[in-house]
Amino acid sequence: MRIATIAIFVVFLGLALTIWATRPSAGSDQIVLPSKTPFTKGRFFAFAMPWAGETVTILKPWAPHADAVVLNLSEFPNKSVVHWRWPPLVPHFGLGVWGYNAVMYGNYDGGVPEKPVAPIRVRDLKELRQSYSFRLSNRFGDGNVLTEFYLRSSTTNVHAKVIEIGWFFHMPPNTRAYFDSATPVGRYVDEQGRRWMVRIGEKFCMIAPEQPQDLPMTGTLDMLPVLRWLQQKGRISGNEWMSGIALGVEPVSGIGTMSIDRWPVTMR
Image 1 (cartoon, helix red, strand yellow):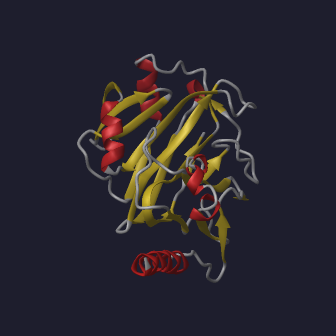
Image 2 (tube, one colour):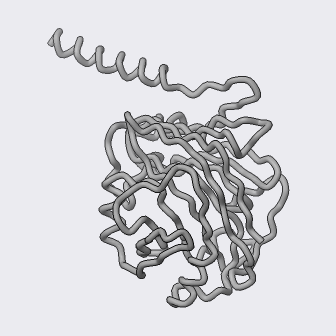
């Protein structure tokens, strides 16, 4: 009994030390943004949402502390660092993620930026593009690196979501398995010659490299041609409204960070 008690104490002590050692901290000109706390500057927004973790009874007390974003106040959204700290276990529901922690442009999913971004009908979009440069630290955990947006049937009702469209820059094996099991829409080749597989699960249109691989951590993504392609496929009509976009991490397991060094977005 004594040995078992000591073992349990050691486990809890190790857990406490791990939590303490990985707690995000802010440096000069930085703040730590806790989960479910909005932040906005200009046309950009930041939010960490442990939505799935909150549905697991045993994790409810921990969920508010699991995710955070360290923001650089003068350069936001650039130099933002997403942190996640979850058990080393993959949740077994849906995509198998604990939440979504991201920086956002415009009204991605109800977040109202300091400087409003006017919604645009898909058929009227002239450009929808982002550049990105990020670093992923996933030695002791993993997560989906995902950029995505919702198309809505309303400019004011954030719940009027017609479809969710997302590109995966990095997918852990369990996410890839979920992706491969979803309904195929087709293969798409972009202007850079990159080959994408497009699949739909419920109302989530997922776009990932055709062969299991990560995208380079620096690059550009022109999203408008994919919307036109989806129109041709009859998956969207073009009457939907585009309101904003996000880039971040869906934590899958363990401890990790994603540093977003640069993220300019053009939507017009």
